[in-house]
Image: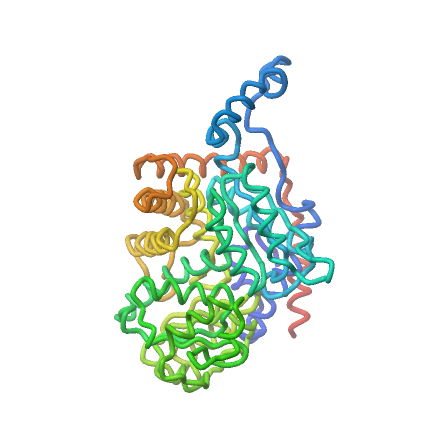
Length: 483
């Protein structure tokens, strides 16, 4: 067996005698094993390269001293000139304290570097945006994680970057960090786990409901998990026309409703308390009872595969929509949900149909915010991005196994960027103005350049291929472990 480096037909490469559950587990095992080996092979995913040329020795005197003195004094007199005279205008800091890395919890400050570098990788390749991974130690003298340390770090950092992407910060600290920085910083501060996941989930939901012949304003929606992602998803759905009386959310202690005194008493959980007041007026307590007759189940909770029960899916309304988005393993395997009657199943993984993952959102929305030098990313901009993504997919055709655009569709990021930029201008948070076409064309050109640079480095051998034998060995190991 020879496994192609593209991994395009990975799911079809497993032996026919493996059960669907074994294939799903083997696929996850293989990808984890390969990720560890590939990161060691390359020594991480990112590097720094010049974007200006050296045409002779004196060009060093242009890029550095004495010539660069004029750049410093120009920016001193007009700080906004830094967006044009340095890479600040196309640079995002990916900031994390690594306290909630994917489904693995607190991984220690440097433990988040793999994910943050991955974010930077996707931002550059998909959106033509430069970024740097910055994992910080937010622990105080008592050993507890202090959100104020992250807030102070980002405030000190903002003169060097055009935007900040917060990532993998545990709740409740994530709420305070985002909300305070959104208001106090003069550049966009965006929490991708919350706002990014919410945008792409809303996009997928809009198209799934369209295919099912249902309306957002009438759909009964149940949420499993009440972390930063799901609470923001619920908030955007409410803002975009969903009805609170049709929505029920569960955390580890039960359903959210106005009688949850434990949430009301904890001022750090103000976002959850807002949802307690806005949803579940009947105070339905049980998960099975809430899911019965529901049109939509959105799960971002404990990784599965048995977190969501098969009988729950059977009890849902006709043409049920299931978003099982825990990482690295969804709350229920897509094949199992389908067997129980699910009409549409989405996960956060790219190796299953309908990847509802923020990777198809954040490169575009950040590119759009940077294009007009926005001071913040508002909920209106996030919702506009969701509709941009949904409309793009609908225009090229959607189906139950294809509800949103994928990372392979290059132009979607340029379209998102242009739509988001127009929303920023309309809401008055942009420093400069540009036309939709100008933003679109510049974004698309930057994306093409970024992808071509990577391809050229691969073709020239500066980025070397991992050995095929390594892939095949790891693939065989994964199969053996699930037999």
